[in-house]
Length: 95
Image 1 (tube, one colour):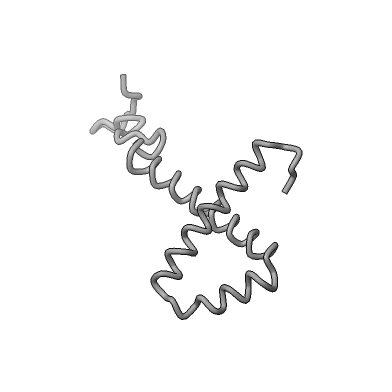
Image 2 (cartoon, rainbow, N blue to C red; image 1 turned 30 degrees about the vertical axis):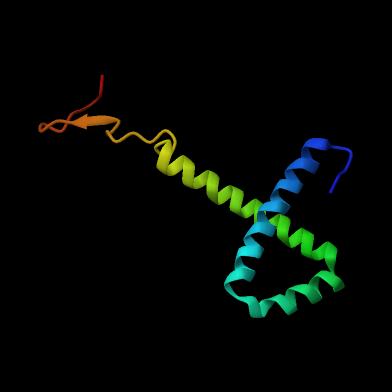
């Protein structure tokens, strides 16, 4: 992580926090993974933070995709065709 760029630092911190919340909820659902998780924290904390940041980044991309598809109509998709074909085989653009 580049600490000279404050925006990148904040973004990576946000991704790490999202990943940590996700991991915490997974630990609440399966408490037997807690001992494995604690040993990973003690042995490789840097790797753990990188994994959490990647998990958080993926979550952010999934959330963005969800909101774009379900709340904003999926971008610039048009429900109408670009042209209308007539019975005689000619096609013209819609007005």
